[in-house]
Image (cartoon, rainbow over all chains, first blue to last red; front, side):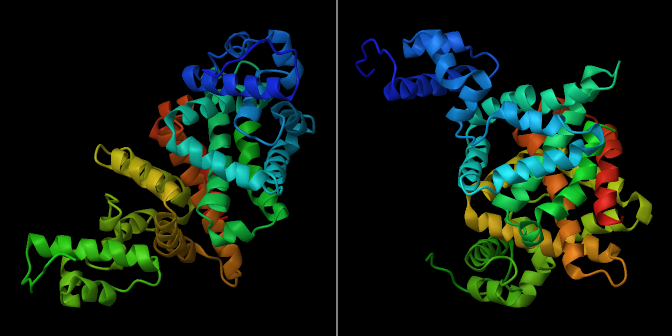
Length: 197
Length: 197
């Protein structure tokens, strides 16, 4: 362990919290990790964790180097008309992935999620709880069984993960060259049918 | 190089051809590799390569440890009525992936394709040329631009690759637990819309 005294705050505290969060998420997965546990490991007051990162989803996004605030993503997807949610989701993800700072970090994230089991688990729990779970719960039909809702969320995730694989990892030429408009037109109805049939 | 004399045929010849094919595919990719070049590297008559493996697609499937003959897969998908091609494709892939011998080899294949660039390229060229390319060309509408056909093939591939990712790598619970019937019912119309709109 590196020698650490009390830290009143500052650039270094942010790094210490990030390091502690990385270890806690890796040890316990996303769901079982608490901000309190991260604060304890970082030897800081839990209020400081809130101050620097907002909440668990934002802290996780920082740890995984995801260049977006999950809460903002979700709002952008679900705030529009229900009949446009499919296209909105496709466009929101493409804008994130194709941004200059997003692309290399996103490729690294996919590779790590596939080759390291702990990264796979963290990312799965995060995607279920914070992204697709929230979108689908926001759109669930009354009385629909939870298992059906979760399957629909999973299939929407499968289409977006597959798109990311073909466009950024496998680099299938026609999918790499397609514009956001083309992809939104072709994939939008698929996501729409899964999320808001 | 290992010392090798002339081989009249037998179990060892098959292995020598496989090794040569693995090197040729890795060096040149799928498209630029010829059976003649593989035979030259293996120091056998090209007729022997045909004898043991049939053709390039079958030899590639053997090299990549894909437990199925691509030609048989394609026939199974396109031989039925056009309006059932989506469900047929989903069911054919699931039957292959969920077979006891298919599952572990398939997981290894995905991991290798993602972490090794040469494997990514080989698999991409193989999928484009032998699988999705053939299916889509078999179903293309008259006069449709080739670029559109290829994009539709790529999107079908993206949905199936994403399904494989969520079911076998990320292990998203609802997608792992879904039956073949459920997945065919929910994903079949997606593949149908991409391949035969």
